[in-house]
Image (cartoon, rainbow, N blue to C red; front, side, top):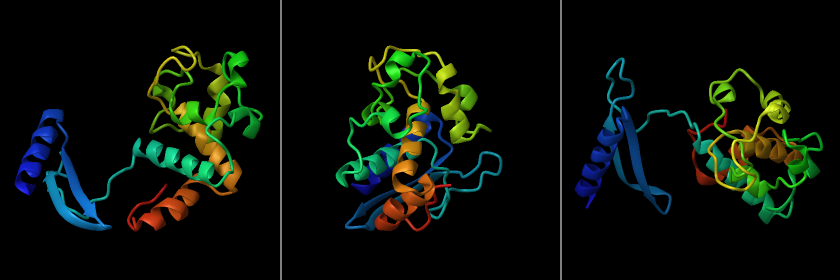
Length: 189
């Protein structure tokens, strides 16, 4: 089975042109299968290895949603908690919608924001600046009409997590998720 899994992984990596991946399947918290495919850098062709460090990228959205879910379980908010109730300065370009945006909308990316190229991953803007710029952004899709991949909703959810926990998001995720999962070589920043 592991040979078939490795072969399938190689086909996927080749099909999508991914330079390299390190894959692992855990059972009861212990790795039962590992496979490293490709290179760490196309510039150096250094082979991928199982101790490679990866940038978390948009997987942080998953951590963000899980963190919000933990706060829901703790009773600190609900999926229907409105953003404006926790962040009174939160507003959309269509202010009549501002009071309807819930945690569910933020982490589900269904507010209506479009792609966020100018403020995206390697942006020079801080979270606070991005949240401050949200009222200037036109909505690309109708409110709750679709899931539109972007970072604005998750960034607002991050600010709400910080407000409710009194901790920076990165520190809270590290202590409440990373440490509990035993992900010793994972960092929020």
